[in-house]
Length: 192
Image (cartoon, rainbow, N blue to C red; front, side, top):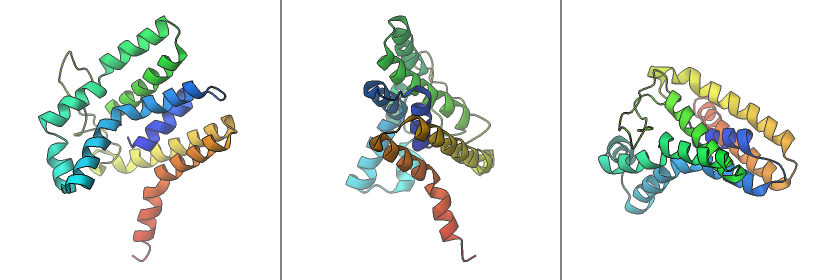
């Protein structure tokens, strides 16, 4: 799924008004599984000038990159963290690891040929879901709009839950970021 959707879902599931640490932890947990991709791809695209075809067609699937993804996308490691948080009733740890587990669960369900080894260190096996959040060959043309609709619904829930200006700005930005591809495509193809 798109990272803004993960952030929206993580906030919806775990963020709490008036509890900044828990809210920040839910945001961090929803982001961390994608963070290494942003850092590595950003470095190659922006600093080294590597072409997007190389970054997303070759480097993404390389052993070096996948070895990093195995760690930050491990349901085993995040699950251990969540179990620790639950055992010791640590709400910040629960929010962090719970949001990461939600992220990984959604990725597990909606990545066809670009999934990750979610059960590392026990196995490097990568599940190929029959559906993809983006690839129309695997129902991406249906899943993508459902993701946006669910994200916008969650934004409405978050808007009602949080009254502070900072959070409302974040919610609006996340909602617009999730909806932006539809606006861009509508403008691009308006003349056709």
